[in-house]
Image 1 (cartoon, rainbow, N blue to C red):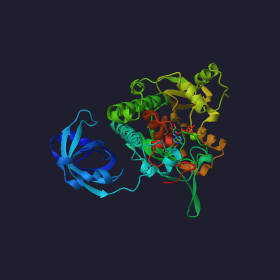
Image 2: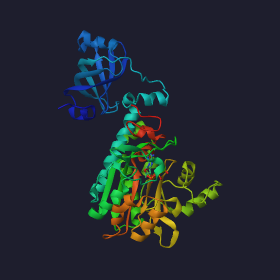
Image 3: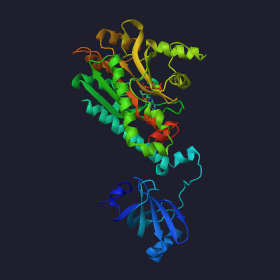
Image 4: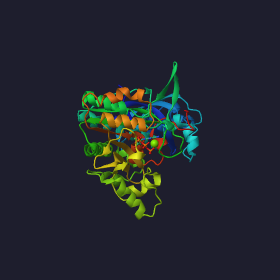
Length: 429
Ligand code: ATP
Ligand code: MG
């Protein structure tokens, strides 16, 4: 079995072979150091003139950054190095001598780095962000699996829009049109009626024409949906999920968070319960801070930052003016002008990470909403069935993986939180 750098503490004083890429080389005359990376970590390999063949020692002059090599040697304890070990080199095999690597240690512009995304992924910070992404996804799955939710995959090719038609990607589908999914919610709802508690997890597509730090055209969303669940219980699930993910990352991504110089104390303060305020309360905060805000509209990025700055934790804003929300949202029985929706805004200005709410469960009301919104009723026939055959109060939400990773990793722009980002201006690599 291949031994990886991250496992080397188990091989103290043993001879091993480690394969990877040249990250850096330093020489002090009769000794040179090769910093090797293999994706699991970094290893200092020490080559001493008297310990190796001449041709191996001479490699110091020819090896280039990102050359692929296998290094043989003995594992030694070295408390000063990151993994606590180093390698005393006995032999090096070169697989390929890398051409001049375009990404050097000096600063490059983001556009250049994005064009070289296929290579940029190898760098320390990008590696750390995407390892955090991996753990955010793992923690998300664990959380729902451990709580008895069933994973249900919703289709990517759909016949209708969930989030309004302005961000739909349309494509030819034989002799008709199809759309890339904007949300699995409607399928989540029907699945919740079959399984009780479910989650949908997959890629989501929105033709976002705005050029913001928070919008991709392809992003990943986890969408739990719960039968017999009201808005308050929905918020309970959302905050538990987010707390679990943050705790998991604190436990499993220490090195990555340190590499990114994330303020870990801020993450450690993310404990239950999260503050819950109404939309009206949030508008009051904006008013008190002299923000010119039109009641009834959605919060913009700067509004969200202003609201989140009042708290150390994510804040849940609930009960929204109904006209600003989608047709499927249930109205508050105590005030029919309000929809039982909720957004969760991350702290430190990272913006909305969760959107959701309680769904309309009455057949007549829902059919009227669909008509009011001028939506093609024939596409919603199956969805309306859920209100005819054992309708129940139910709720759910969508959490955007990339925005959550951006917040946890302290990454300002969402494009670095997905391996190969898709935006209006970028379809390659
Ligand atoms: P926004 O107002 O910021 O565009 P939204 O109201 O359209 O967000 P929802 O439809 O509620 O968002 O989607 C649920 C979650 O999906 C959001 O809270 C966010 O985390 C994520 N999300 C939405 N749109 C995008 C996007 N274009 N890129 C990345 N993540 C997104
Ligand atoms: Mg949007």
